[in-house]
Image 1 (cartoon, rainbow, N blue to C red):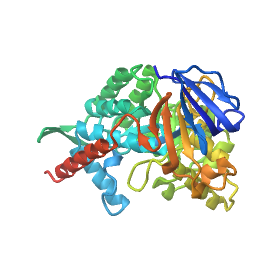
Image 2 (image 1 turned 180 degrees about the horizontal axis):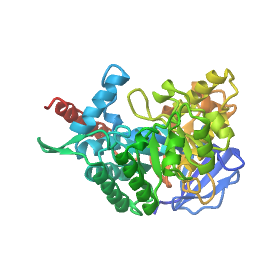
Image 3 (image 1 turned 120 degrees about the horizontal axis):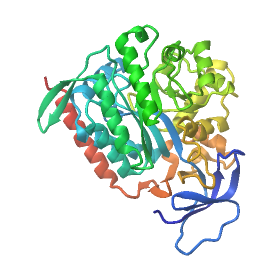
Image 4 (image 1 turned 120 degrees about the vertical axis):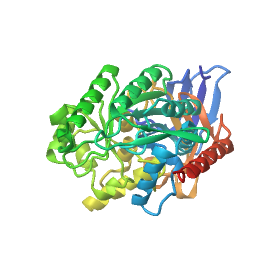
Length: 455
């Protein structure tokens, strides 16, 4: 149980139904939830901890609906995206161990806390094709590290493509064994992980991932059988299916062949969609994670404004944290605006409030968590960030929503709170040694680099 916390004197951007902005508001947090929000200070007991937010914006924690576990320790490798992808594949398959995944998870959480991202959805591994789910230990290490850091996360675990053989290397000290990966066995491991973490920590959820198969691949018997088994598992365990890389008719093809989607489905990228793809999104209620910083957004366009106009939930994802992307959601708000303003040749596309919605309440809705997070409202979980606005790039003090969406960056976050627990205050982690996190990650990095040269 967390103690009571009172935040006062800040500009409170609630993101509630009325999109209220309180010029000098308060937020009272008790037992991890918001119990009061408004202009007038509530009566509190002597035990309440107070934070004076003068000069700051108080707002919901940011929600990143698409990223990758593992990427934090492979930034800066390779000279271009193709080379990076090749190196990443080798590392994930041949050079990681349980310590790699734990150290990387802590580093990833460290960056998210610093950037004000309180909830994220991550795929466990290098895209949909190199999922380290041949055994549960790596994902267990990741989730345990996240639990220790205090963030919310939806971790999507799943199988590899059955049409591409994979061999993974597992380490014991300096020796290793190689194992041929079986996608059907991976599904059984995923079921084990889902059961192991169900109800274990209210900040962590395990979802199911499935590679995106195009219309030709779906005619393959092994692909169809694996997809059906994944769908049945997701329904049996009551977890969403999260997919990475929909494009050019793949949504319609999977709907027609598998009836794969419902209102809990979360589909990342969604570029160059057909009319049939969009019709499926509208009919099923499936959600979209738009990643304006991603390479796929270079190769094709996600019609995010058009989808939102049609009633489809579209959230923002960073696709972080490599090869050239960070967990900074403010950066992605800015890029989303420029991405679509250039397409339409209209600077009015995606105005600041809509961008902030995509990064907060719409992100929560994409994860089916909007009853709990995504806005500052009485009864919701107290995921709150304080953004220091008294800085030259965020001055003068007019229109806080526009300043956040157009000018802010992750380094402007002063305080990060999840479930009423202060994780960062005055730019410093409260419960963890920052240097120790960095040192651990460095050791795991050097161990990984040494191993990638093994034959």
